[in-house]
Image (cartoon, rainbow, N blue to C red; front, side, top):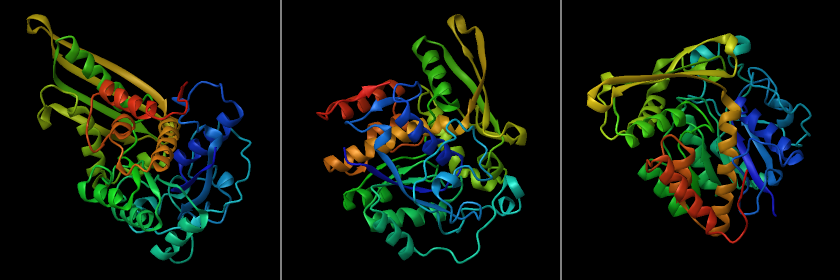
Length: 368
């Protein structure tokens, strides 16, 4: 198989887990944790990181293999021996990618590298010179201007996209049309974790609906200690994140809840949790005879590996789409792997559409 050449924008915890996992599963292909071991013949070992972009002084100028372990990254290190990629992280454009309080956060926040922001021409040139197939967007939540800047670069350079953050690109009709016209596939928006708060919450609601119980109120409160949660202390950066997470839950309810009866989203930054995310989910409703019932769960997961599992699949599906000549938002894959896809679908429907998309290729798809 030809390698899948990937550019990473944002060398944070998610990038760290993704790069670590790529080498981990290349060396341990039968280890548990992957959703699909092979997609259209592409395995983890076929993914290569050919461009890294960041603005932090502790990452810019360093090999991607070293940058993924630099502060403020604090996710679990499960693959310490990372082979050098030979690719040094280039300085990108700050724009709105760094909230003011994050630039003053010391080891927990960002340390902006010296020098001017990269221009659009420089990013496009880097994408072309690296011969990247796919750009993965791991910018901080709330980076609307910065995300759109890199989307413009991807379109100009002719690169497919996996949009891992809640800036609406794949789900926006105008942006989606531009990718379709350019002949480029995109999966997005806002990665839905492998077994995270959103998919667990959606599954519980589906259980209520399938068994005839009515959901009347619900919340999902999350805490964490990584840069993502620290970034989200600035509530002005949360608008699209709140929409993404809330609509992912509203979409599976038979009757949409009023705003006062649903609360979804980040709750607080707890530094000692590091990349460990705690999700507190509660559903209240009525069952037979309109008798009240409720359920509460506490979910504890390492946040970034939870996302990386889905991104690994999305990368390979994007490459499959490139090979086929498919363009625009990939409906089934986006609904399966993302919180805010172009078209919200129930998990079983999204899974079936994903399976049909993968099965239509002649090469083997191996489920882990």
